[in-house]
Length: 473
Image (cartoon, rainbow, N blue to C red):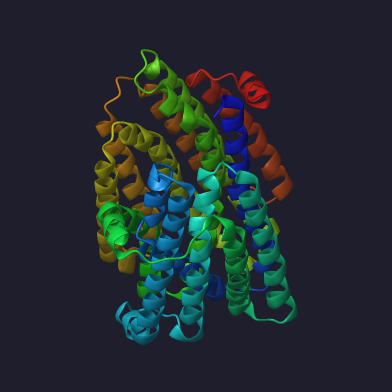
């Protein structure tokens, strides 16, 4: 693949991921006018559950497909591979659905959840089932280098979900169920659309001999994948157990704002990732990586600054008063988002060293820290604990990744820039108290320009040159 085509495809993939998330973010101010914190807590819990079920129900089989698709000797073998994996995944998840319908309710009670199994969790189970139909077709369009149809579908799915959600919540007053029903209906429809799109690339079959090889490859990846999701979602599950649905709603909306950073970090990382692998092992690699790292840190910290500093004004202007207190938790949560984003960069180095099991081990360590500390301190100290523990676990994972990557480069610039941002956020969010919102926004904007100028100096980044370089690409 040529450099220009690589950049083009990367941009298209990033847009397919970013635009649907931005659409969901646009819906946030509208939905908070019609949903209570408890409603929002239910929706976020279901989304959290679906993230976990998807990892459990797919067993990292999509990774096997990405690796072995081009090792097939013919087009027919490729079609049979897709058909075999798809058949197995559908069968496996049909069994998983049956088990969850029979045993899910007592399991939910055992977790101490405040959410009713019927209808909320039942709807979640079927949302997850129909969503899995998009995973392998999405992987197919990646390996055949046709990102545009996939991106168009993802954007279209996001737009339809947005419209249908507003109709069900606002017009039919379905509240939390409206959000869930919209996702269920859209996933059901798009399951058939994805199947139609791959009809010329698939031969349906079930080859158990091949499935044994698939599982031998993919099952060792599952603990690390599940552990990573546990690190990121266990706080929501334990808030539901130890606190209230309203607390879960407040925390969830704060996390929603903080995780906007993921949208930009994912796009930036996709732009950097190919160059890391391309230059791995070269004499100039350390200098190249350090420049990439500093640029990535620069982009991330500007995102951290803006999201944290203006979170209070956002909630006051864009959400109902019952959600206003959520701003307090945004800076605490976003520390973990920053650490997780930067971990992707060092995780790439570990992958380049072909030490993928280390990434899984790091995820397990993070999950253990997150679950253990939340269970100990969450009942006593409330939402503050969830925010701090999540960020602490992610920061520990980042530290281990940096240590194991063993790159002989300086870390003084990133640490100094992080300290500058941390002090600035503390002053502007928790110390500065201005009742006039417009004046507050103006003053904070000027302060941010000063801090960004300081970041540019510490990290030796020329923002104008950086933007021009991106535009040329």
